[in-house]
Length: 126
Image (cartoon, rainbow, N blue to C red):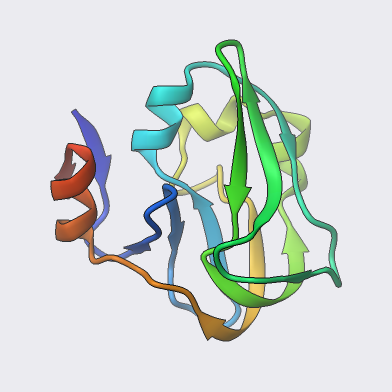
């Protein structure tokens, strides 16, 4: 079963935020497992504005292409170049080295606790 970290909060669209300032954003292990082998990541650029609940990029796997949704509103302040150069890192370490971007948050979208996300999506809270 996929791991859901208790220290993070989650969007219904399978993104996580760590709550720091600026906040890191990534996809959950539930999403990475469902996608299969990730082969391409399209991320917003530094300086781009993102809006909670709206698409801001995509993740392509050997199975499908999935939109990334911003879990928060704000401005992109950093992008994980390692995830762009080596998209498989999203499968290997989605909560660590596989983070996607950081946002200077002006407003949060609806976020779930780890327990609520795991209950809705089948994961083990760790």
